[in-house]
Length: 521
Image (cartoon, rainbow, N blue to C red; front, side):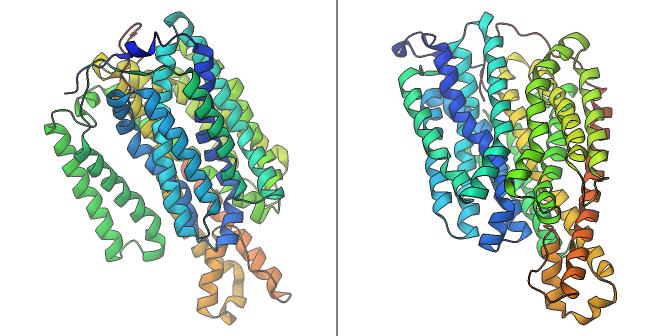
């Protein structure tokens, strides 16, 4: 089992607390890139789809590949920080993220875009655990909560600004500009980081479980690839069955190796605590619901509703802005009521919001989406805050950092799986309903053209330039089919949220670990 690793500043680098608020600024600039990238890309997806002739599965990989790379590499990146220093790993992550963003903007094919997004996710994973470790070493205990509050506000503001910035850039410049914007932010973060950050690393060095990294990566890739490609191949296709079988086999080998490795990537003893296991499941489920369902909203706004990218960003602002208020409020409620009631209540509010989304019409007004968006903000915030308390607080002290890595990884895995699974659900529903919505006119369309129209309808689009009245008929059928798929996706998310609320009733508050050593993975 890995030893308890206390994060301490290097003696050669000073106390590590000489510039605490500048440290907050430096790490915030780095993580702002990650947060902006997670929100602005959804706004750009419809334009990317049209410009690069991308399929739905391609667009899913633009999102899922990034999230998957983040999920797989978070714990490993934390261990690299222990070994080589968190300042060094953070700055490498900043530089790599900015350079990869530049390369994405210059890419001209969807294949290159997906590959670079995966690489971008790897660099993004280097930023998050290193940033938290640097904050922990920079601030004294009595001021750490204040720093974390400011950290949460900055993340909330960057999330809220993402759709607006993305909409402005996509509408007035290009989709490539949403990636180019990371370059100046990265340069500033790198300059400030080199100036103010103090190096910190673990007192006791550990080794990276590289075989565990490979096995976990293989397991998750096989799973998500099977789910994304199944609608195209068919669930009974040998390729689909083969990748699902590979997921089971490689996953079993990973679990076996983790039970035998001297310093495993993910110590299985962590999950002997029921609350840790449930907390991890809750994080996966809430990310599944949020990322999976929200993936299709930009296609609804721009494809079906006919809004511009800028207007689409404004439509999504109530949720992001609401989280700025809801996050600190969630911390107060958890302190007074405990995580069980607060998280269960938050998931029920989330379920109500998802249900309202499942009733949206094609001509939904701003208020029709603003209400469920605000409910989502106040429903999701207690879960994100409370799940951290459940997972980290109930973990043994010598595994507290690994538990923090599990919490972040679970969120990324849930997002990737939500995008993939709900994407498959929506696509299947659209394909099922499209011919019926066309009516007798479908018999006069060649099968090849019909299949193309079904794929376009899965992202809320319809062929342009067709003669009337056939053009209007196909457009109406595409939009109706997409809405039925969207409604089913949000209905599934509603059920997942209700199940998560029930699971939350079985957790307990974590042990207080004030002053315990901090391990960052």
